[in-house]
Image 1 (cartoon, one colour):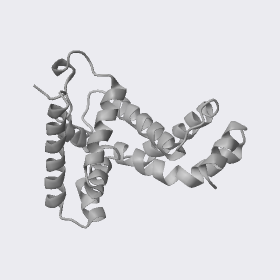
Image 2 (cartoon, one colour):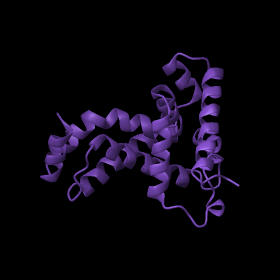
Image 3 (tube, helix red, strand yellow):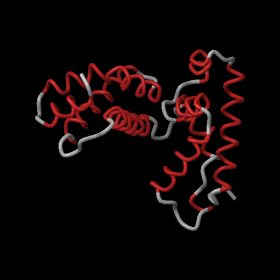
Image 4 (cartoon, rainbow, N blue to C red):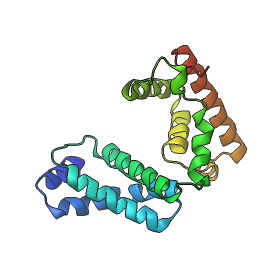
Length: 186
């Protein structure tokens, strides 16, 4: 079933919309949540919360593309769950990926004031467009989907060392890009 049909079913408040949403994107949502949470039960709860959030927001929203909308909701719910689960503890799986990339983003103090989030997202998309497809996918899989180095190594048929080096080079390019765009860390 296509996304438009699923959105239409959800708009009509048909439970078949949820069934089809689950068939279409359930495993993807679970993978995203599990990569962030590293706990199957928490990931399942996160996916259920995602479907409830989609049910509650469609209508009035008519997301296009639906997959991006659902993935963003899943990721946001999983990140909130990480914060709740690890209020004062460290979640080594997800925090490691965030620590790798945090120095590549300008701090609010280095910019006149806090940069508008949509402007920052636009600049980041501009950077991603400069990367070749494989590096772009590698970056997104690591820092959006939280894939581990081992998973990326298997997915891209590279050694773990090669994956780490490529990610390091991409982060360096990102840092240079921010400096060029006058958002550099100073």
